[in-house]
Length: 193
Image (cartoon, rainbow, N blue to C red; front, side, top):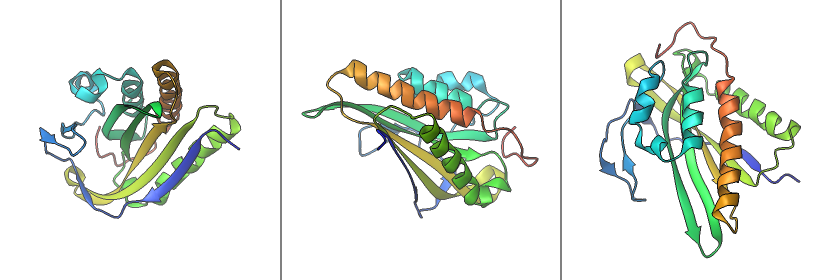
């Protein structure tokens, strides 16, 4: 029995990339800051509010958008939860393959999910965290193409201290970041350069 869980599901609601909505307040009280193309634009990372308060999430986004990866980030968020059960952290990283032909086949994301699952299993990932991968159809406006995005929702278990929660979160996001940062650039038809 593992301390973690790793699952894959499909969301059938079509979304548009790049999206606006800047300043819209969400139901959870957060805000939509809009899509920013960070691929090849590392200086823009400082302009993403969600990354200013979470260094672990920032490292994932930096790795996803490195020039040598075949990915780019779409969105992210994290939030603290403190209630009668204790402390936990929750958030997500949404990304896409940086390939017009690659985004059109959802099975390309399954390969990533499968290899991430093998990584967790083979390394006996010790953290009590849930990784919920969700594929979603999207219209990529700048590429004038339909395809899919992938979101990894990450949730730690409850802990009795904030320090334990932050350690679990940091280790979980470090694993996600290292894995996504290792997806090699292979495409010849990038959406973003």
